[in-house]
Amino acid sequence: MSMTELFLLFISSIFVHNILLSRFLGCCPFMGVSSKLKTAQGMGAAVVFVIVLASLMTWLTYNYLLVPLHLEYLYTLSFILVIAALVQFVELALKKLNPVLYKSLGIFLPLITTNCAVLGVAVLNMNEGYGLAAALVNALGSSLGFLLAISLMAGIRERIENNDGIPDALRGLPMALITAGLMSIAFMGFNGIIK
Amino acid sequence: MSQSKLKIITNGILTDNPTFVQCIGLCPTLATTTSVANGIGMGIAATFVLTASNIVISILRKMVPDEIRIPIFIVVIAGFVTVIEFLMKGFTPELNKSLGIFIPLIVVNCIILARAEAFASKNGVFDSALDGIGMGLGFTIALSLLGSVREILGAGTWMGTPVVSFDPAMLIVLAPGGFIILGCSMGLFRAIQARAAKFKGLAATPAEARPAGCGSCLMAKFCQRDAEECKEAK
Image 1 (cartoon, rainbow over the protein chains, first blue to last red):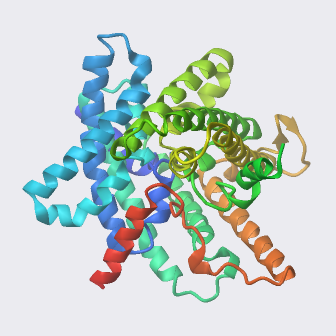
Image 2 (image 1 turned 90 degrees about the vertical axis):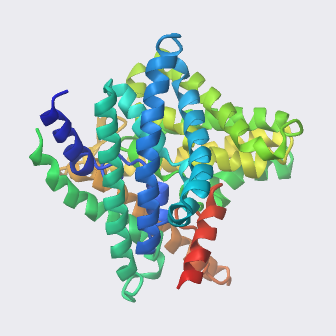
C-alpha cells in the first residue's frame, strides 16, 4: 500500500467507518463507562494502547504461525488467547515499569480482554488481508475513533444527567442509545470524504 | 417438567431477558438486527454456543481450578464458536456472509461468559443446559422483535415479503436506526414495567438500580471499582 492509501485508510477508520458508531464494535464500554468524561478518556486511551499492540501480535500470530501450519480456522481461539495473555502481560509490565501510567490506565485493562473492539479489529485486519503497515494504521485509526466517540459521548451525557425534562423511562441507557443514534447520523456526514 | 425447571427457562426469556432487562450483549444486538432473518440467525448461533458451553463448563466445574477458570471458559466458548462458524459456512453461506465478523465475535459476547460464570460453574448439567436454552431464546426473541421493527420501518418488508404501503425510512436499517430503535424499545419496556409495577402496587425500580450496559456483565466488578475510585478522586 502506498502512503496515500495508508493515509486514506487512517482517516476512513477514524471517521467514515467509526468503530463504535458505524461498525458497532465495543458498545458495552461505550454505554457502560461513558458517564464521566475523565473515566471515558482513560478507557479510550487504554483501548488505543491495547488495540494497537493486539493487532501487531495477532497479525504476527496469523501470518507466521497459523498460515504456515494451515491452521487458519483456529484464528478465533488463538486471537482471544493472544489478547488475554497480552492484556495480563501489559498490566504486569506497566505496574513495574511505569506506575504513573498504570495508575491512569491500569484499572481499565482487565475490562478490555472481553471488549469486542479488540478482537473485532484483529479479525477485520485478517479478513481484509492487510499487510503489517496497513493493519497497524487501521488499528490506530479505529482506536482513535473509539477515543473520539467515547469522549464526545461522555461530554454529552454529563449534560444530559442535569436535564430534568427527560421522561423517567428514558433516563440512563435508553437516552444514551438515542444520543448515540444522533451522533451516528452526524458521523454519516463523513461518508462523502473518501470514495 | 417440574415447576423449578420451567422457571429456569422462563427466567431467561422474561425475568432476566439479556437484552431488555440485563442490557448486555449490545454489539450483536445493534449490528445484526437489520432484518428478521439476520436477527434470528444470530440468536440461534448464540443459543447453540451458549447451551453447548454451559453443558461443558458445568461438567468441568469441579475439575477447573478457581484461579484460571476464566481462560478455560473462554477456550471452551471459542471452541464452540469455531464449530458454529464451520456449520454456518457449510449450510447457510449467505447468512454467514451477512453476519460476517459477528460470528467470531460471539466469543466476547458478555451474555455467554456471564452465564458460564454466574450459572454453569455453580449448577448441574441439566439445569445449565436449560439455562442456556432459556437465555438463548430470550436473546433470539429480542433480536427478532428488533429485527422485525427495523425491517418493517426501514425496508418495508418482513422476512423479505413487502408488508407496508408507505415509503420505508432507509435510516432505520442503517447504523443510526439501530441505536435509536433499541433506545426507544428499551424505554418502552421500562415504561411498561413501571406501569405493571404500579398496577400490582409495587414500587417501580429506581433509576440508580437499573443496569447500564455492562452492569450485569462479568467485568462489572471492575467497572464498579473504577466508579468508586472516581468518586474518591472527586
